[in-house]
Length: 379
Image (cartoon, rainbow, N blue to C red):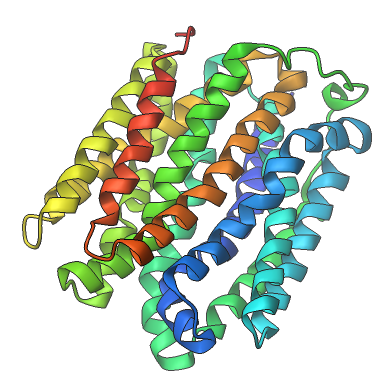
């Protein structure tokens, strides 16, 4: 296998999922503007983020069957096409319902795109390099969040909230074209049509870990900037910088964390420590204000990247590389359950108990991540 080719395929995998996540994360920085435009509540605003996870609950696992039958290029290309169409509908929407339809379409395409993009990596990288590869791959969410959270509040103040969705549509279109032109199938993925391994309990425990982690991290990235402004009096630009800090730190740490996990081989320890650090940090975030607020936000940011890299690495090791897409299907079923429930529950809690810090709710999600991680029986 050409060493240069595997890094090119990793870049393709990264960019296709980055484009979807870029479109997903274009929403939180302008969430207040959307609420005003359509006259909706916190719960309804949270639903516009959560609705993206609805289709994933039912499609993530069957997506593996589609990949086994049609191949990664067809399924990944279809996913990017649906994402682009969904982003365009969102851009053109003039009502809450139409906006929600666009977000739902983005979520459907995102399922196909995400499972396909992660299934690419184990086909090109050996187990000894999996942490390093996944450390780089995990930068897609981080870079998408850092860019949108730090640029869009400023840009939207000049050009309006629709600019967010116009730019994400362009990025998705570019990603679809580049994927179809550059990506190459491998002989390994041909003829793989079995669901053997679906009963492995460790696969489902990883799915639960990823579900609760995403309930926590997506709730935080969706709502933290808004809550920092409303509850703690943080200026808007600083508020969304702090909300994106976990992703900014991930950009800096994820490749290092991946290489470290390959060397130490104690992936469960990293997962457990990360979830505990997140939970404790969120409890302090709920109680503190500036300038002390920045410290637990920073500790939350440092704790975050250790979990995704090691969960992804374990997912590709529990089953063979040819069937890694099956474990990613289970993993992202949990992902979309978390994406559906997290922002929605956090938003409705804010509606019902406006005086209660929603960061306590997010901390519960992180604590449940720790409880699930304690059940792992792999290293």
